[in-house]
Length: 192
Image 1 (cartoon, rainbow, N blue to C red):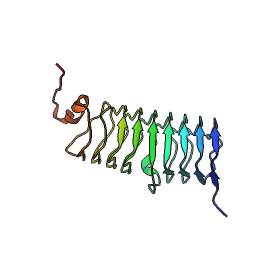
Image 2: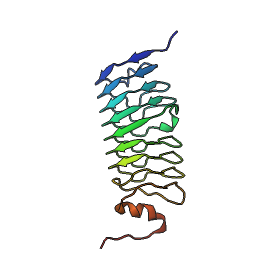
Image 3: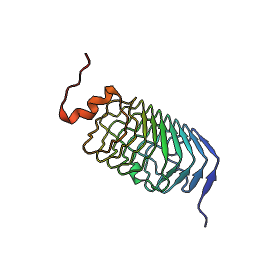
Image 4: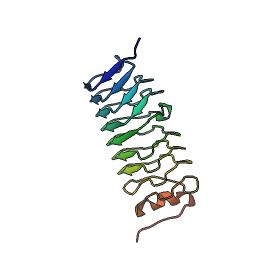
């Protein structure tokens, strides 16, 4: 019996809470205005797909494959991306809410986070080399033994990053973000 395969299909305004998405592979598919809230997407493969204006909050994504996936205007509260299939894992986020999600030990090299809320998101031990955080709120986000080399934080705010326990070589920060790099020292940085 062959695995379910769906290619180049658009799903619009569908509820996947009571009627879950069929397990299998979805390639070049578009999901617009769909509700996956608290549903089960375990073991599903998404390849070159886009999610626009969808709610995936608290969705189960154990061994889920996200390969070249674009999330736009999506609500993704409390997702454990660290449980995903890491083979070919590639995502980008624009105007999304990723609060309380986890990317623990996840490879996110060159990932784009744009106009996205990342409040209390866990990036501990992840690889964010070359990642771009454009206009993001990182209040309470966890950076612990995280590779942030060449990452760009110049337009983001509210981050606290300890340079002693994170790799930050060639990372970019704005002058207004300086207090977030000195927080552990309790240094007061004032504008005069």
